[in-house]
Length: 205
Length: 205
Picture 1 (tube, rainbow over the protein chains, first blue to last red):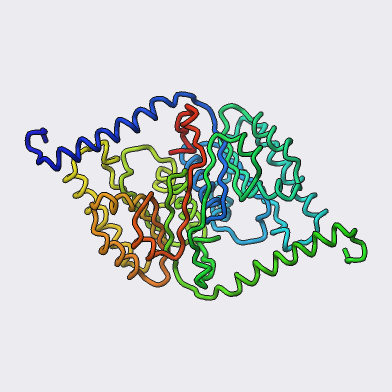
Picture 2: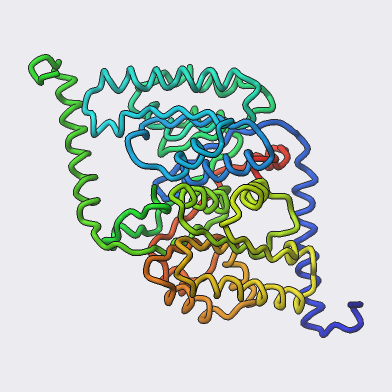
């Protein structure tokens, strides 16, 4: 279609779209550094772990090597972990497996468990075979002071240049944020359980 | 460990954790309605599509039937779509495939493409075999008025009771929000490309 055949409104639309395209193209062209990124998914809303798992799927789709460490989680059912365990043996998964600390109520045991789990994370962050390392709910370990903050941040900073890392969880502190390339905050505008709707298999877990 | 062997600090910690557990248990117990949920993942931050894809993986892990409709997307590479297409033939995927509208700059063609794509979405939303239907970037179709808002909202509301639906994209309008059970807003705190880092395969696409 040549411009001559367009109505004034269509021309206006085309012009607007061209301008938007130029803007997007310019910001993409300006970004030239190629290296792995550190991403923090934080906030109180639904979708932090799901988002990390979506990135895992994305990376697996390109044949990349993925490592997943789940702090806290481990006692509950998890459709995505079930799937990856069964169908993607090349994905390395370590779950802390003690459940939430408010289920154990034993601080010494929690510290021990988080340190043991961290050892797996540290090994992945030092291993350049991993293209993507997911540290699910790591922030709580820092919030509770179960793990040493500077040890964790250093390990993230010192990881192989091509490796990307995704950290999820509320909070985490400003020093962790400062070590990140991307920070996304997921905010609950409203949530189904507040209307009395039960957590849903395949959606919430 | 009995309480007698705990230090004062440990007792305090245990008490705090117990209180937190009671609070969480109470809100979970209060949620009794079992049905599919409608979720909107919105906002300008990274992680909306990833999050939807993580839920797809979750549902697939339980052997649930998933349908994915991608508005706008289709021209770009996508690790997650590559994976699902190759390894999960039971997942039904339809991508609009015209690329972003600022790449086509032809409004009539965009409307036609969005209507054709919507027909697939409408069929899934009327089909109780689907446990989870993902409508990726649907909001833009409403924002551009390429699709009729009330038609879309009615189809979401009238879907089978056990079916969950996830809509992603910025904006979408208050009527769409009102039709949802859960709304999460993903906010960019900062993003790697602003520091000149290129979009990353396996992370961003």
